[in-house]
Image (tube, rainbow, N blue to C red; front, side, top):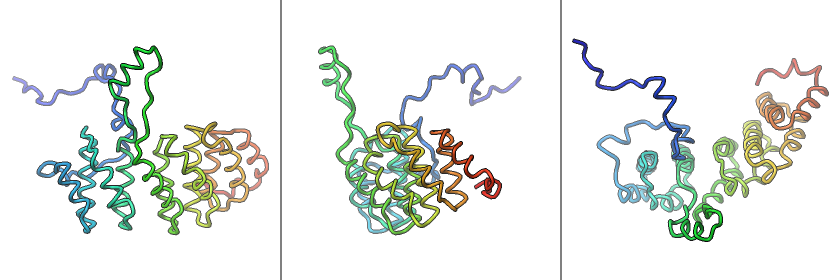
Length: 262
């Protein structure tokens, strides 16, 4: 007799009828973490909070990994946010900095309206109350801005790459001047990632956040010598302002074959 499969297989028809993810962590998560942190079960919020106060970077890294795993599993972990801001956000430990970026990607950034506020708005016949940005996010924005102005070009570049995953206008807005300044940085690693950050911000909030994005990129492209930075800048123009992209090609048609593929 055939042995029944203990794990039912997902049929194509089932996949077609499955609802789309509604949790923001499910729809915007772009990374995976090693499972060693979950060995023996995740620590409690209190234990994670205590470990984040440690002076040992390894202990902090393990605690922050546990917090991220718990949040991806649906645990809100509200107390951890201030602990990360106080004890991790200004660390010079590179693995811990990378984990902080992953944490900013999944942490809830808004205060959802209460049921009383929703009910009051419904009774008044008005629109549903909007979400409010958490006050702690102001401190986070300041820390992100510090990394955008960091003297180390690789810290700047990695922060610019991270901002390509941030979709919140309230967080990106204060950082736009620093992102624009990175377009003129001496190091090509910073410039190529700044072009991608401008592309991302303009694509999501172009008219309100950075309406002059294509013109800035066109000016950068006219004097750019690095292959990768030139490719990213042209990619932005090609998608956001075809006229400027065609104008660049028309002026540099004889040199296009020398540019390389980036």
